[in-house]
Image: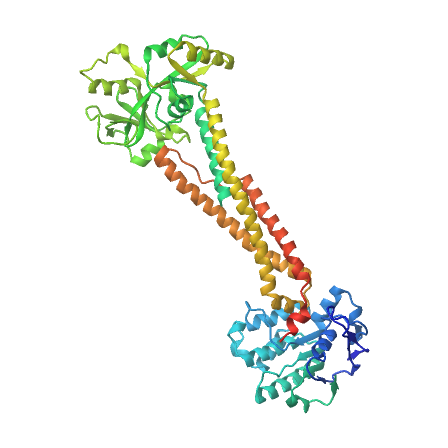
Length: 210
Length: 368
């Protein structure tokens, strides 16, 4: 369950401009798209929900937790455990292999490590062949799939994805969306996707337009 | 590296010079520089100031203050190693013991120092031919009168290791033989220097004044001269050390710059780790250990290179001055150096951490 009260946010260096965001109210397992023109603050909203930015007003419930009431270190822990982030550009720990990146993510979440889950995930996302490769050796499609795997490996309560399909062709786009939906189902988590991609819209019932 | 090198060299040089000059209170030799006299007669580095007549030297011994006196005479070498004519008391002074063979008793019998014997591969019973002067040469070889090796000494860690010891008569006779036609009678026997010990220091002081004023001889105190020499050397060591400290500080600065670069170049990774649930302090630890690892490797490598430097220096010194420096285990000063390395790394990490605290995860990862 994810719920936001009327959030607003202002960047430190632009005092005049404040973003106001509509309420979001997702029941458990409900997915949503956030759509809107660029510059309207889609990514900002996503980062507010992930606790990476601190809102000027309002708060975010994830499950029963008001995340902006947590202390800095509590928020760190909470993010590690319950939030899965998939960024527009995929970032990894360069010196580690695909598999090591996944196990690192799992370890840092401080949840019990589920080797079976990791193995299954690697298979589902077709990363088996490259699991021992360094992350700079893999293709763009594989990078995208790995970043999805990193977003869901620890079974978060909410998966937040920022334009996950923007650099992909139609086939890959379909695949990424269905993978995300499937993983969200397996993890019993809410999936929130930012997009301006027309191809994605038909896959989700709930649209939040900024 | 430079620091450990200088630390070791200065320490060992101090030790060397003091150990070698300890057995004797005073040297008496020909007039000249007192430092040169000490360097040549005791440490066997420099050339002698000249010879003195045995009669004159023996006159000195009548003074009641003198506990004992050991004459030394030299001027010949075997393959670059000094042949020292002296009395049997000389070896006792340095507490030298035989490794094998027997002490020299007859004329032209010699005892070899440990290092010389090892370098020249000398065995008991070998006969060697000396040549004139203190440097290796083939010009003036005393091949009419070879020396017989009767013994080899155990290592002492003093100058003795690099000397060839014989009695005074042998030295005289080698030259008597050469200078047959010149006047070189019993009455004109010469020695190079006299090494003395006194019953008490005040006596030594009075005695030196007497020698320097009333006779044609010169008296020098090894301890005083060595201290003077070390004081001169100390200036050099201090200069090198200050350079080393400057280099050390620059190294610290470069650790700091490297850390900043690390944080900047890898800000994506660091921000990513933050979204994985690590806190700033953990990242700080990560960076600190990375820096510590690098600087410790540098430290150990530097220590190692310093030792290699000493090894090279030692080879040079052994060839040139028959001096050698040992490769020793890390000592307390070097331990402090290690602590300093760690402290500098900590300081650099703290300074670099400011940029870590300012890390804006949202901006770093959000910008496509």
